[in-house]
Length: 257
Image (cartoon, rainbow, N blue to C red; front, side, top):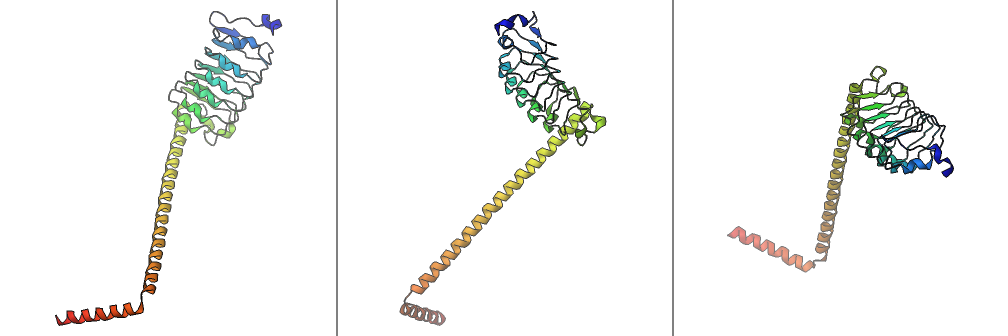
């Protein structure tokens, strides 16, 4: 796209590239070649539907502002942005956030309000430095219990998610401490259920093993009984008569003595 090169300026001295309000549907390929200088990318208020996998090449990127576009998803390669600290993607058509986002361990802020998010990956509960998580006005019906692990979180807002009220009452939807407490409660409950299921499975396996041993012993007893009967049936009648007479003689001798 050499004829459009003059439309894409280079990042400024701070590494910021501002492409907001340009009407972009697909960003120019030149953007993905700025991996050695790009620190902040602002593509807000465009018509972008998808980012290419090459976004993962921008390994020095610290901030992304892609709010008010038509994004329906992020590519998994976003997990390669190890220096990313802020992601602003509100006002799009996202139905979830990528699981790979949990690999961006320096993330401190995610703004994903005004989307169509129905679910969030549990892996986001592993983000060790996340401080702000804005999820207002989405379609959430539940939060991952793993969010109870977000010990650094200072602000989480889930207001405007009507189907979430069974888990997070409306009056608590912007109460960070109560939301984290609720998630932790669900996390601990699921952990106990998992432990009980594991114990139950172990007991069932032991019971099955004992049943198998019992059945094997019964089979062995039956075999021994059959062998005994065969031995008895194979003994000569004369031998049995002599044995019986010998036993009587022995009994008489014992009585005399």
